[in-house]
Amino acid sequence: PTVKVLSSKQLPKRLTVRATDGLRVDYLVKGGEDLRNDARVEALFAAMADVLAADVNASRRGLGRTLRTYAVVPLSPRVGLVEWVPRAPVLGAVLRREFGNGREADGVKLLERATAARNVALFGPGTTQDGPDHARRKKRFAAKMSSARDAFRAARRVLDARSGGLRRHLAALAPSAEAFLAARRTYAASLAASAAAGYVVGLGDRHLDNFLVAADGALVHIDMGYSFGTGAMLAVPELVPFRLTRELEAPLEPGNARERVRGGLVATLSAFRAPRGRARLISAAPPASARPRRLSYARLRSRARIRAPRASVRGAPSRRRARARGPARAPRPP
Image (cartoon, rainbow, N blue to C red; front, top):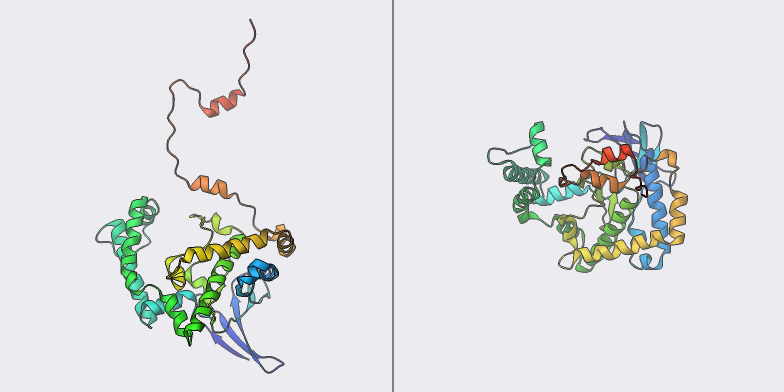
């Protein structure tokens, strides 16, 4: 066996071994992380893929075969093995390389210029980058919708010249026009199936470095640390059900990308809600003791919503005072 240390924050290792059939098998050895949650989510994803393959409508759309899974073997609460997905780069690295015309370093510089343009639009001239300043973060979170929209548009103007990086990546992988159309169909089905599956398991932290792009165009979820609704418990709760940004829609253009994704989402969630699909998912779900406490998304939305102040009437009792007195009694007859 051979071991290669990867240049990441936790310094994971790529382990290559020869199997009994003579083939080479690669694993990712991760330390300092509890992979038991990843194993539970992958088991649920495998059950969802079986449900989609058995459903007629979902199978006709190819949703079952595009929901990709991989093996996760927890060895201890701190160490585990993850199956290496071959020929599947990280989505963030693909976009950074396409933004930089083939050079990832140039793509990083372009993203930094977009961040600087966003900060200038949000904080005013003289601010070029985010820092650890608490007041600046507080101002960014408390920005009005119009200010946030202007900042977003300023960043998009910097990136517009190189947008559509994922579409160019899939086109470069395809040897012919027919192969590109097949990869785009696989990508559309995978985008819908993975979005619905991530929503069902409450998967959060879906930034660009938590997706892989397979050689046939399918998307693969990685790093399932924030699952079963734990992303909604953060200081800034994640209330968006799944990621569907402009760069993810680009491979499906010039058609209506959202309509294509919507059809796949409806077929996937319908298969999950069918009696057979529901029974299969319930049997594969982890026990309640292994999941975080149940969340009330309505309560989280009401907590995040900014309420207008109520108009008070002089002399009217407050709710707290009325609750302390108890319910009002009916007047006695004369």
